Length: 290
Image (cartoon, rainbow, N blue to C red; front, top):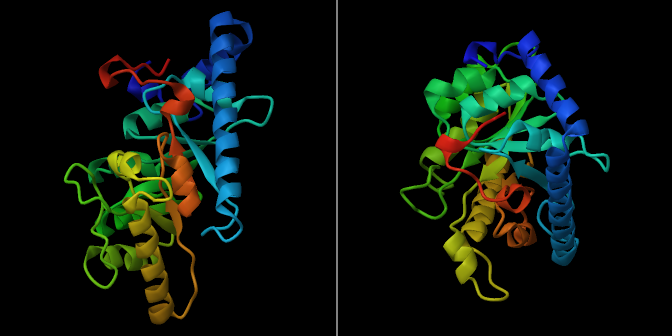
């Protein structure tokens, strides 16, 4: 289907959804795949609950942890299988590429809540802003991008939850602002969202922790990237209270397939799990939505 046909509510998009729904009812291979995915996500949910229980009642963020199923480079049929599962379908899905997210959102049910978790390019924000059921953007890394998303979000669309991405590892390969609370770009982004972006709701902070640090952490130790994000959040909460006179709690988006349990233990409110649910991903050039 040509890109121009990937429009929400178009006849072509509706027909694709109907076809996918029918195949999930009749195609043996897709049904087997659906059962595999459902079992996988049930295991992950059990691990999330166990990690919460192990952290105790004083865990930062309380008892709430949102599991985001990261479906990048996976077909729409995988997403629909999990969303339509009889035992309580998965609602929150994460994508890394705006063009892929645009196509998927056009052909899949509007009851899905989409999270954009990839690198955010200013040139692509217009398309992202027009996704009505965009629940959250986890990768805001400049005041300019926040202002652009706010300006391009259509009137009447739901407010978009946003996270400011912080580069806690200091790796050049990772996006995000420097973890400086008292000066620099981070506070500029935070204050801009809170004061100048009524179509955005600042939920908290996101980091992509270095997996090597999780693997190197000894028993009883935590990934230092996660520890750093907690400290940054606490510092920002204190500054917001001093400067604005209000108490806020910044939620943390951190932890992936290899380290989400330890991230929950230290206070993650959102975890982004992909390969443990969907399996190994194909190369981008080989991936197909349908």
